[in-house]
Length: 121
Image (tube, rainbow, N blue to C red; front, top):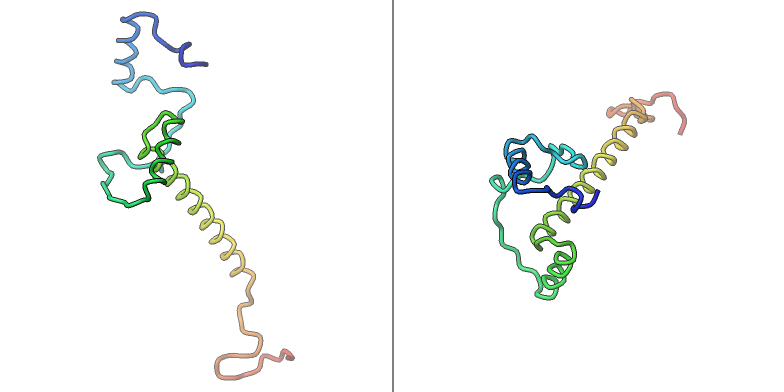
C-alpha cells in the first residue's frame, strides 16, 4: 500500500488518526516489536567523532538519497554491524561449545604426574 493510499480524507480523519497514534492505538502492520532495538534518545549519549570531510560529504549524500539525516544513517549502519558481530560471536561460541563437548575427558598420555594411560604413542 503506498503512502498516498493511507492518507486521511479530511481534517477530522487526520485528527482522529493523530489521536490514535498519541494513545498508541495505531501500529503499522509492517512494524514489529524490537526489544533489542537502538535505545531511545533519552537513553542516548552524545559523542564527538572526527571523520574526514570527504567521508562526511559521502554520508550526507547517502542520507539525502534515503531521505534521512546523516546521523540517523550512521546509527542504522552501526546498529546493523553490531547485530552482525553479535551473530558471528554467538555462532562462534556455539561452535566452540560443540568442540568442547567432543574433546576427550582425560589426556591421552597420562596425568600431570607423568603416568601413562596405556595408550601407545
